[in-house]
Length: 70
Image (cartoon, helix red, strand yellow):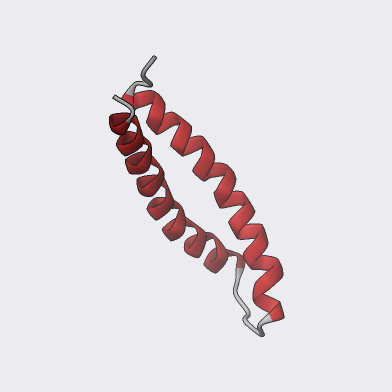
């Protein structure tokens, strides 16, 4: 059974939202270890940029693998 495109987007979105939270928390822990200081708004902005890239990557890879499975 094939996954619909909209369900692929929902799955990728859920994955990315969880990843966003983990990324921001990780940045808040790891940045100080390297002497980097960032405000919460900076962490959120950095996380948002990577989240958009990750969402596109996840969706496109899902569609590619779905097509290869045909």
